[in-house]
Image (cartoon, rainbow, N blue to C red; front, side, top):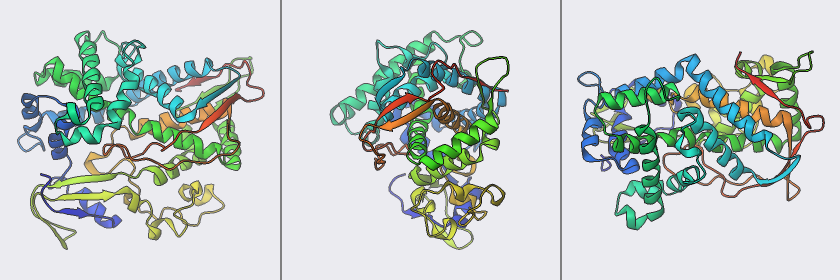
Length: 441
């Protein structure tokens, strides 16, 4: 599959044509070819995955997993349940912070959100939540060595750390699923759905656990650096920080008269906190730098003009699309959230998105668009808002200096920073001893 021609598509209209041609320009073949290199499942499981890979003769494992995941992550009650659990866990970590703390910001966000997000997905039996095996740290050893694992050349020799991390994560999930009882084990609907489909296709626990290691990439690898970049961009701009604080306070915080704790109203934040949402989108425009890929299953004329040969690879690099001057204007290198605001919300509407959604692809597009995009948006905005309302961040070095992104994994679209930022995290004046709440109403 990797020996054909590579076609790079950077025109937004041609990207739309790729999206419309999902039967011929397919993503699923990459799951079959690269999935085994990532998770290390056995050949029998590979045959199950490859059967009816693109739904040629009815449903297959991959199509059922995809459809089940989409259904679970588009279900409002499911998304609210995951978000509630994640924020409950995150709130617990914030409550343990002292009045003043000095932390490595990315390291702290990564540690806390790894545990919060996986607990929201897998429940209290979450294998990454125990201190003894340190699987929450081991996952990042796996992620950092993923490119070498995907080469699949004597992984125990070429990347012993990554190979060992993958095996330990697999063992952790094997223990988890050995104890998993549908209807009794409290987990997300997504996890339950995957478990039932695995049983339907007679996957044994060892291989189901290995496949779950791959799921972790979708759960963790992009949302954590996205949260880091969102928080650093906001706190490093005092004007933007003040504006967003005022917006959250005025639209999404319930200050009750009976002396009860102030409450962050999460569900309506995307619609009400337009500047915070625009800031998140601008973060993704700057920092979602990966590439969407498709496999050419048969010869096709793209947009009726360009011949793509069978067995070729189509790449749609986000870094190019997100820097298209025809779409974003000449200030593409400037961090300017206002470009995502509607004219009615924005006094500076120059360079707004010109009805070209295919030029903005942090979650991919077409039939393979990330099913968790709404969950990521809600969770990232809520975590940032919870921090912004309660804490000030002060760089230990005295001034904010944002690091450059560092590409570590081909499976990651939003890259982590090449270095951490040491900050003092201080409770805001007036927030000392105040217990904040959140609601999903």
